[in-house]
Length: 629
Image (tube, rainbow, N blue to C red; front, side):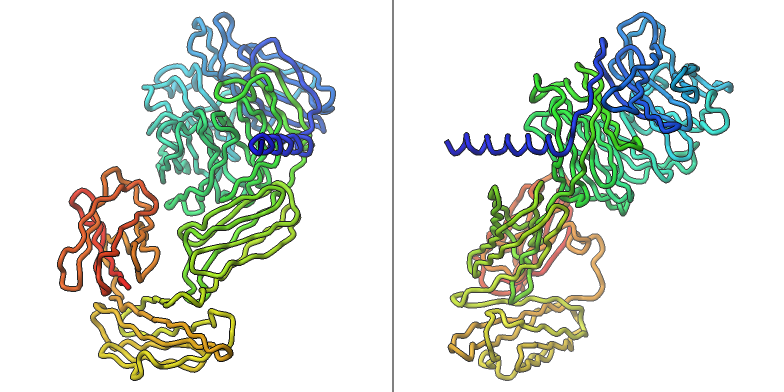
C-alpha cells in the first residue's frame, strides 16, 4: 500500500509540473512522420520550419493558438524519403539537409531556401559542390547541419569520403549565401551532430564521445580535447557562458549529462538526468540556463541547469501518451528561441506542437559536512531532508551533499554520523533560492581521541587552532607532552588551544606529533587531542598520482581502513603495497581500478608510519606516506 501511495504521489507531482510549466497552445497534424524543427522570425512574424520524412514545411506561428501552414519545400522525388531531416538559418536563408540513403538517385544535397518573401512565397536553390569542385565527389546528404555566429555552416555525418572520416564539411556562407564555398574539412572521426561557438566546434562523435575542435583556421581543424560520455554521444549544446556542455546519449536509459568545460584541457563530469528508466533522450538546447530537451517517448522536458552539477526537472509535456519506455517514438525535436518565447516541438507520429512555457528555477539544498574539531571533511555521513517527500543522501568523498526540488517550502535537514552529535535545522526556501552551508558535527565525549593532521613543507611553520569542538568553555591541559620538544621541531601551545609547530628539519622524511587535553571547565570532562604534522619535501615528485590528485588518501591518520579516492581511468587492476618504516613489505593486495573509492584493510598493522605504493601493470603510479593510529 505504501508503494502504491508513493507511485500516486509521484504521478500527481508530475501532472502538476506539466500544468505549471508547459501550456499546450496548438497541434498541427501532418500526413507524414516528423523529423526536426527550427524557427525564424521577421517583421514581427514568427515561423516554424518543420521537417518531415519527405519535405520541409513552413508554418506561421505568430498566433500560437492558430498556426497556419504556408509553404512546402519538396524533398527528392521517388524513394521512401528520409527519417533524418534538419534545417538551420542564417540571415534570411534556411539551409536544410537529409540523411536518406535509398532515394532512387534523386538526392538533392543541400537545399537553400530564401525566406525574405515570407509569408507570401519562398524560393529554393540546391547545392552539391562549389564551383571549384573542392569535394572529391558530390555532396548528397548529411545527418545534421550547424551554422555558427560568423556565417560558417558545418555539414556533419555526410556522404563524402570514407565512413569513419565523415566528420564536417565547412562552408563559408558570407560571400554568396546561395553558392557557398568549401573552406575546410574535419575528418578525425564521424560526427553525428555539433555545436560551434567562438571558433570551437563541439562534435558529438557517437561511440567516441565528444571532441572540442579548434576551427579558427577552417582549413586546419585541431582537436583540443576529447571526452567519453555514457553511450552514443548524439548531440551537444553549451551554456550561455560557455562554461558547461550538455550532452545526450541516444540509447535506452542513457542520460542528459553536464560537463564542466571552463578549462578545455581539463573537462570534468558534473551531473546526469534521466527522465525514465528506459527512455531515450534525443536533443538538448539551452536558454537562460534552462535545458529544453526532446526526449522521445517522454515528450518535452525542461531542466533548471543554473546549478549545472545538479540538473532538476522543472517542466514536462508528454506528446506521445500512447508510448512509454524504450523506443524511437514521440518527440523528435524542440526549438525555444523565437522572440515571443513559445516552444516548438515535433512529435514523430502526431505533428507540430506549440507551447507557452513558464520557466521556474529549482530550489537547491546543499552543504559540506566537516568535523568541528579537525576541520576535516566527513565522508558517508547520512543527510536526511524532509519536506513533502523525504530523501536520504550520503556525503561524498569531500563531505558534500546536494538535492534539488521543483518547489519551495519548509525543509528539515538532519545530519548523522557515528561518533558525532546529530545536527538538525529547519529552513524555508522559495523557488530559485539556494541553501549552501558548512555543517560542523561535534564529536561525542565518549570519543577517546580527536586527531588533527596537517602537512607542511620542510623548514616552515604551521599553526592549528582547535575551535572548542564541544561547544563549551575549555582549557588546554599540558599533560601528554610536558616538554613539547623534539629533535625535528618545536611545539608551542597557548591557553586558547592554538598549536604552533616550527620545523627545523630539511629532509622531508619524518612525522612529528604532540598530545594535549581539552578540559571542560564546567563539568570536568576532558577529551584528548593528538596533533600530527607530516614534514614533506617541498620538491614535488614527478609522475606521482598522489601529487597530481589522481589518487588521494581520504583521511590521514588511518585507524582500520585506508580509503583512497581514485579518479584514474585504466582497465588494469591496481596493486597496493604497504611498507613499514624499515622498508619491509607488509601488505600486497590487488584492487579493482574502476572503483571511485578503494578500501584497504590495515587493522592488522601496528601504530606507526607507513608508505603506500600504487602499481598498475608493473608500473608504479606513486608513493604516499600515511599514519596508522
